[in-house]
View 1 (spheres, rainbow over the protein chains, first blue to last red):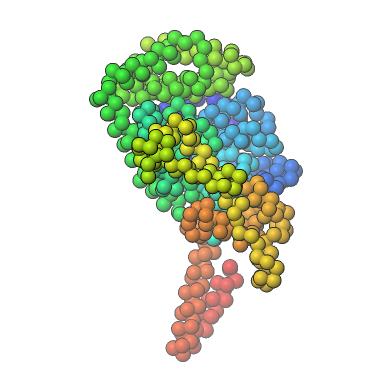
View 2 (cartoon, chains in turn yellow, red):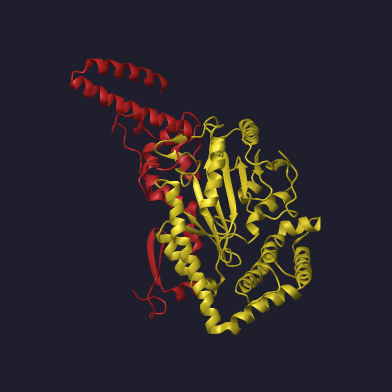
Length: 352
Length: 171
């Protein structure tokens, strides 16, 4: 397994903006929570056992030959900046980055596959794909799960399914999350209708970085709330049935905005573009807001001078940790705002 | 129902707040809810959801209620040492055996969380899947044996009995 890690050089597959419905769906993510029978859950584990478990799982992950480019990082031996980069890439959770004790992550450099070791559960397997592709993501993660299963004794009960530290994950241990870009629904204040509708069908809405986070830049994650009593296929079907309806809703509203008030929409999109092109100080939240408007503008053909992949790239590279990584040194908040404005200006100028 | 704030639009946002044990319900239209800054995301916090449910979890049965060992679920798990009270506080179990240990308290909780029957219907790990298949086959053979005995086909019954014995050795 390789162990070098420079995320600023390789962009994740999910950022390519090439997947199905990628004008609205940023990514499809599936994660499986798994534990092994030989050790207690991480909430009750002793430090020595925790270290032993990390080594045990790392070895099994290596043996399983999940991907020829798979690399493994022990997070205790990873800098805070690199850990934050992994969070910004959605490859590890915030809790895993800020956690304590022996823990790690195995990942494939394109970012489609990552396996968190010693997070809330012994293993959190994740597949992340560009656009709306729940079935392709399931096929990939299912294969990984089977390969690991032949080398591990998963904690499983016939009644409760895969046994997890938190009872909200027990059963399939599966969470399917679709990251949606819904600027038109937010702009026309119809987003609440989506929240109400999804809550009725046991789906949850979360912010940009998952559970307990804020919605930034008009991005929302829709995921299954329930993991027990339904099979993996049924959970996938619920997503496949309802997510396209939200996509259609957003598209219809975009169309209406164009036909009824094209100049108003153009003004909004170009003002955002102007801010990014000219600002001297810019926060990451502000950047996300403007990039969100620009992203919609590009997808609607209102802006044709920059490709969607460049916009997607800016979303990640302007985040605090990536920015510092690009800059080669740590920066405090005011320095970052200046550095970010400069980076965005240069990047946009180079595309013109 | 009409919005309690503007008294004009249809109320589609229904909030229930519990302040000092008093339940307060508010019905607002989308417009007014937004003005008041009602956060929808807050309604989806899994931790809060679990916290609310675990507090309402069924109390343990009185001593003498039932002689089964499951009737004393307040005992800590012999494997990891966690008590059900500790689980209620943290929302996290201590080891995979807790699911059996606290079964009686967990089943109603799981039913509420997942809003479904507490029976896994998804993927089964291969090893366990094989065992399930074997057990299913065994049940079929036992039924055939009964049938053979009923029909006084003792030769077949003897053969089936031997097959069952061999299969049982493998489970």
